[in-house]
Image 1 (tube, rainbow, N blue to C red):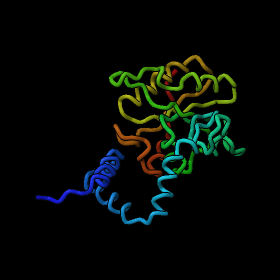
Image 2 (image 1 turned 90 degrees about the vertical axis):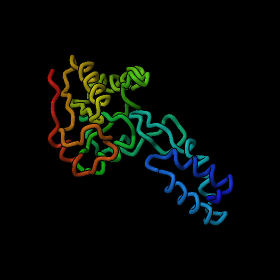
Image 3 (image 1 turned 30 degrees about the vertical axis):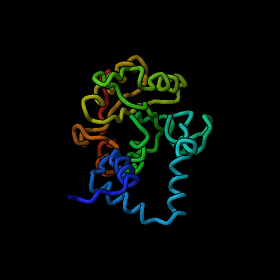
Length: 206
């Protein structure tokens, strides 16, 4: 009969298994590694986790993650004076911004939708920040919108919906070229692939 771990370790392993890409064996190794830490290091990790939501807020302009606990905070990109504010890249979630920034080719600004339209999951148009996008476009500074959504069915359906919603505006609406793997999450694409896709972006037909 296989010896069981103490209850506290089993509970920790179950929490760790809910993380993306973490299976039973990985969770076991991570839990045992935590157990080997000294009390000071464990306490520091616990404090960081407990305060994580309090120390991160949404950028008041684009919805990206920002440091701080105030709704008036700006992310580093929106606060930068050298970004090209005439080009706006629309993404589903903040991690996709990190992937695009790693490509080193995009110098515009971003808008985070906060998800995508997924009817089978009960997520309609109200689940994305389309109103915030339209408010930013009303300011008149933006000349091109790049819909850099995941290439899966739901991501592309969301991109088409937004492109249609922006059809009457006098701005270019484009999407990254199809160098991205079908059905994949943009957050996990490598920088070279993202750079090629952005450089060869496709314009939505008016």
